[in-house]
Image (cartoon, rainbow, N blue to C red; front, side, top):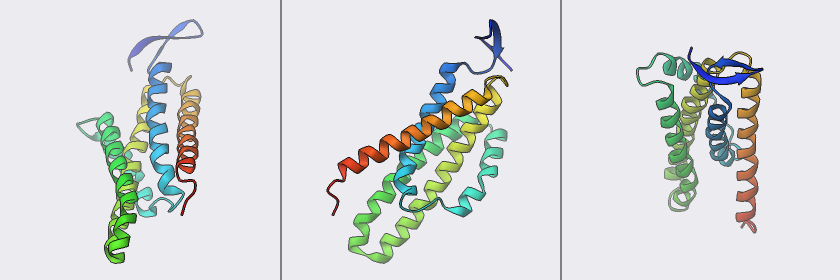
Length: 163
């Protein structure tokens, strides 16, 4: 475990400092911002959520490391979230094509959440000093909730009046 020179009660502590924890929280806030738009319409894809331990294990043993899993999962999540929104236009042309595209988009959303979210939490747990873990987990989850709230409020205002 590396020592970053961070001080906790006047002594150096190993692992992530508060700035690194907040940076991970920003990723979690972004994850929440994308997910709120889809989870308020259709909850997470259960089969993908059940495979989250596989994503966590995959990021543990992979050669590319957890950061690549986090970035790749976020990229997939962003593309799939955009794709899910775009399926509304496809439904107008063909219900069957729109439904197939929506199912694929939601499946990819679940994979993106699993790859990025699980890997992020594993990284946070493994690289944060034990004394900081409760506070770090709180910061990251509160930031995700903040991302959800800000996105939901902003989207609600932009869609008003919705027809």
